[in-house]
Length: 142
Image (cartoon, rainbow, N blue to C red; front, side, top):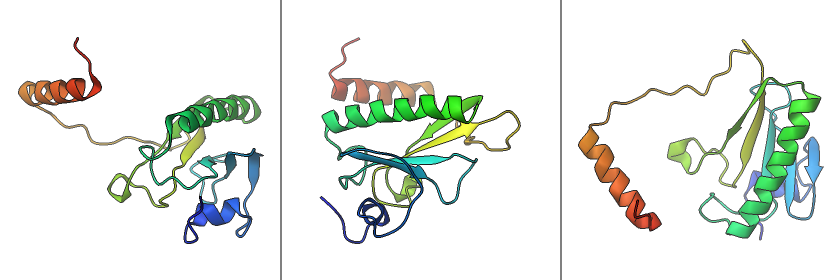
């Protein structure tokens, strides 16, 4: 399935050029045109899924194996000291392109890049209420 208005679907169809680092029948990985660090790579399913919630579990599992392979190659090739894996769902969460994608970013000491966000104080009662709701939805009885 392809969305004719999606930038990433156009990249998959070779309608927009990209600097590919990996491709198979299901997935594509290419360098980000506005990288946080050199080697910053996007990994996408070729099928158009908007968010992580919409991708079938088997496809997500296969995608995670591809991400791990690329992370290993990146760590060795880029001599990265660490890696960030980032994924956003929905515009309110910072998703700019509505096609499921993961950012894999090589990291180095003092590279000046940070995923830091403000921390909030949440009362214990609220934390417990949220915990119970999520645990119940997940079928967890612990």
